[in-house]
Image 1: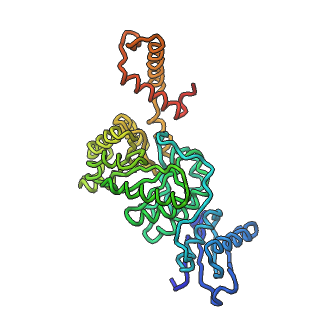
Image 2: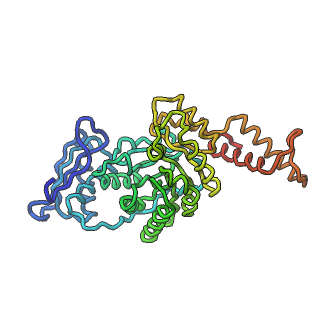
Image 3: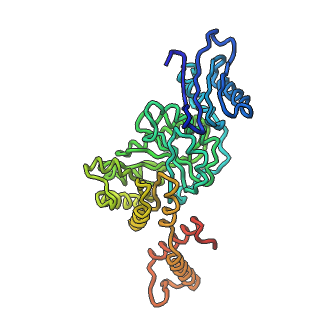
Length: 401
């Protein structure tokens, strides 16, 4: 790429909901303003709007003059803005590298203990998957900046994710962000925290210090931005060392609301093949559940990678719930319904729990110290478990009263 020229986005007949942008330093030094050459099938309807937005984005970045070439493939405004900014920064035309300042989002932050049965991974540099993601009904969407993004596209993906958080309606889904490791992850946070993600997934955590560093970085950014809003953390344990330190990692920050696993990396670290049955990671999964419970946070299972194996997914979910997990990651929208069904209490479980709670309330109203249901005595832990199940059923929409 020539000096003073930056490119971003994609072009080609197979591209949709994206665009290619090239930004170059003008030959006259910028005195002629911003010149925009646009190719688009919808130029008749949206050409002026795309040109106006391009000039507006560059002006906000302090770019007074540039030559811009755009090949549009149906990009929405949030994509146009992200791609133009990425190209301008790659061209070396933007001096300001500090975090931008936005108006706080008008949506409420998510609750610490909200239902997290499903979380749908979305590649952070693919806008076509983001636009309708909220229609799939997942409890959360993960805008991924780590494994799904090529190393050379991390900078552009950060901007796209930031703009998606500001513009895309993800419905009732919790907005999650998976950052990269180390310094790259801190750069991710600097770019995206101003757009107020609800939760940050931290990959390959092996030490509580990894969590503390992310917590401190987010706190500093929020203080600078005057953004008073909860941003939760979910460490991903992907090695034997991380699993062994699960409890300490879960307790490393008050922002931590859940622990989860990355089984592909974990099995590689263990030196064993990953199987459909998952016996090779049973110890790790049970240890993580126990650590999460001990720390008072949720235990969320890894993804089930075989999208075409619906039966295997359903079986994995049933066993996962039986171990104590509260949810599962998914890499395809077709997995969501199966996950929700598996992690929801059955009608029989709900009815039994309601009868236990009713018996407890009746005994309490009569001043009785013993709770009984029929001929059976009900211990306090059973009552607490029943209360939690009833609350979960309500939160999942399985119980209305």
